[in-house]
Amino acid sequence: MTTASTEKKRRGALREEFGNPERRLAYYMILPSLVIILLIAFFPIMYSVVLSFTDSTVTAFGSFVGIENYVEMFQNPDFLVGLLNTVIFTVGSVTLEFVIGLGIALAINRAFRGRGLVRAAVLVPWAFPTVISAVMWRLMCQDQIGVIDVVANKLGVISQPILSDNTLLLISCILIDTWKTTPFMALLLLAGLQTIPADVYEAARVDGANVMQRFFRITMPLLKGTILVAVLFRTLDAYRVYDLFWVFSGQQLDSLSTFVFTGVRISQLLFAQGNAASVFVFVTSFLIALVFIKVFGMQTSTEE
Amino acid sequence: MASATTTQGATGRGSINAILFYVFLVLFVLVSLFPLLWVFRMSTVTKSDLLTSPAVTLTASPVGTSYSTVFSNPDFIQALQNSVIVAGTTTVICLFFGSICAYSIARLRFRFKGSVMTIILAISFFPAVAIIAPLFIQFTAVGIINTYWAMIIPDVVFALPLTIWILVAFFRELPRDLEEAAKVDGATTLQAFRKVIVPLAAPGVFTTAILTFIHAWNEFLFANTFIFDAAHYPVTVVIPNFATTYTTDYGAQAAGAVVVTIPLVILVLIFQRRIVSGLTAGAVKG
Image 1 (tube, rainbow over the protein chains, first blue to last red):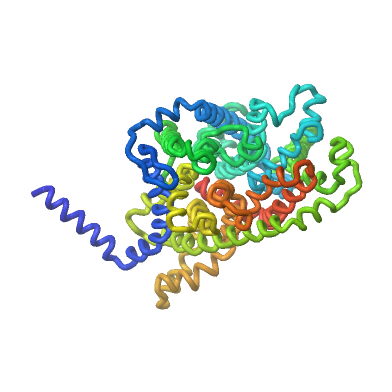
Image 2: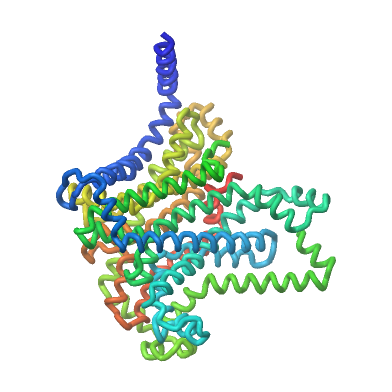
């Protein structure tokens, strides 16, 4: 009885929701975008999961092989190196970007002459195609003639050509990403800082709070939401790094994404493992987002 | 204002602070712009000057040979054209579907708004690389692999969330009374959208178009995966290949990179104020 009546009530609510012409129009208006997204992003990821449990190739659907692809993937040194590089790159670049970005945001959070120039300087690296910035930095790192290689050699920072050493390549990638995205991070954090009312600081100053106290007791808590959004966004972006590694290192440096790409486009033998790796990337990205939402308490609702 | 008063109050310490602040700013601007400036310099010197040393590169007199090299390369011209077609089509499709969807979210009341926004947000956190394998199979099956659509379709999916987010923020800022006035005068919801919202939102829509265009112009993974022949390559695929086309002609590589970047830099410089408000709209609730 009770279940039947709640069922009826729910159906009634649904009918009311879709019976109302204005609400129905609202659904019609979001439907095309939703269909595109579901069809071309969510359906393929499901398909990817299915493929990862089979020995399919690009041209033929294979038979079920259980978790064999995953086992082989975890035994493949290329995958493990890619995973390690990706983790180091993500942690390194996001940490640098956050610390430097916050510093810049705090410094320029006031009225001053030349604001326009700073804003332009912030946007230029951001607007660069990642691929093109990778090409530019690669040109500047060429052995003997590239300005960075020559200067770093003169200063004694490096003893071998940057472009032929994987450790130097990885460090360079972290620094290039920091160059490219720190300004953007600063921009987001600055927008967050500007929503903090000045009288809060004034009140704290009157009460005798010093700079450090104001920073840790006012700025950080009130900025937490913006920080979480910005850091999560950057973390997931860094985690799927492909363009920068592929182009800057001249296809030498492995990441998770280059491993998947190799399986799909370069080596047919690695197609099954590439599928397993793509599911791995998807699931771990999801878990990272979940940690930000559940553990750090990130707000996901956008309702006012 | 506040900083001006402090500077006047404590002259000595204030002016040192101000100088330090500007030194920091200049440094920041220089570091940001250095690669573009340096690569531009590389593209305007002769090959032999470039190969001598960075110091010579810096002081050599400018020449335009590298630019004539890349502009006489038919593949490069074709790639520029391909990129414009792909990014342009992506932008138009995204704006069409995105503005309808964003209006509904920003203005109309309905029950599952939260879930819809979550799905859309999820895409912007979605690793594109996770779907290249199934898309490769599907695009091959329907015969659009190695065509513009193989780039446009996935580009739309990943640009659409960005488009919707920014448009929702812009639409929310528009005054509600105008629409209601139109409705009182007998306009339907769709008419109110077309006749009142669209013209009012034009600046916001334009900003969104620029951001979507930049996003699609910069895309590399899908293009590099789904495209096989030079006739369809966008610039992001062609420029890295210059490293093999012009092995030691670093000037030509630099010129290619500069040509592709300059339009974006100009766009960004002209519309910087709007772009900043568009970019930060989604991340900060104001």
